[in-house]
Length: 117
Image (cartoon, rainbow, N blue to C red; front, side):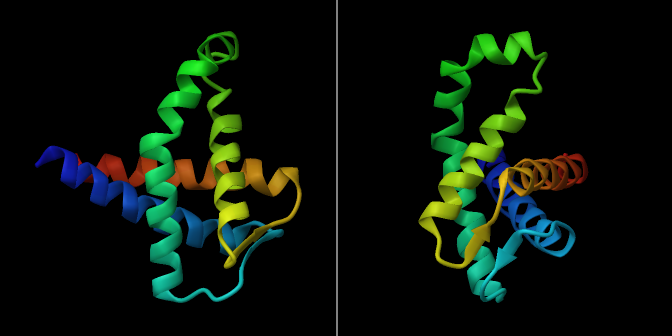
């Protein structure tokens, strides 16, 4: 039960983060910002966070230790890159929108998880 509530909160956090990044960050573009498109993007990002992110954290563990955890921004930006290449509705132009998008989505997830506990 706890896994399902965490999964749903992560899904809502990703959706809120994608919307916030779209509103705030120039270069972070959504082609058709409807509810269904946001839900599909949030679902795909949630799947990437569940399956790909742990593998990347394992591979880049020493880098994460050396940067005191700030390397996770690079991993999150890479996950956004994967989402950008997979999706036709999301277009991210430039390196800074990837990094800032990763920060905004992470902040949205942190806020959602603080209230769900």
